[in-house]
Image (cartoon, rainbow, N blue to C red; front, side, top):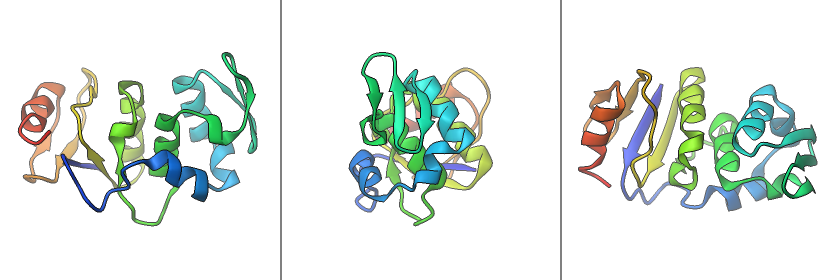
Length: 146
């Protein structure tokens, strides 16, 4: 289940890409979920754990993928119990945040209103304990906190 704390959260990792650069494991990069996320969000191909082929930048290291994808990878694979600031992600990451939340219990911090799309979803808002199931309700609740 996906749980979100909206607004400032001191214990959240504010800038997940820097944390990622110092903590990721090679096997995270070649996992099928990561390969899909990199292809979808960054439009790039995972060649191996140390090489990504970008249509814009050419061959790049894992440390050069987007901050949004780095944050998604942390959400999916970091088992430290840390909470990541998902405002490092754009709306193109929203469907992946929902997907990761279906696969495991995931708590994130959001400091802006993210567009989770038109399909029904299930998100617990930690600020007030409310369960939201659609974008309109999410926006109404999030507007009170961000």
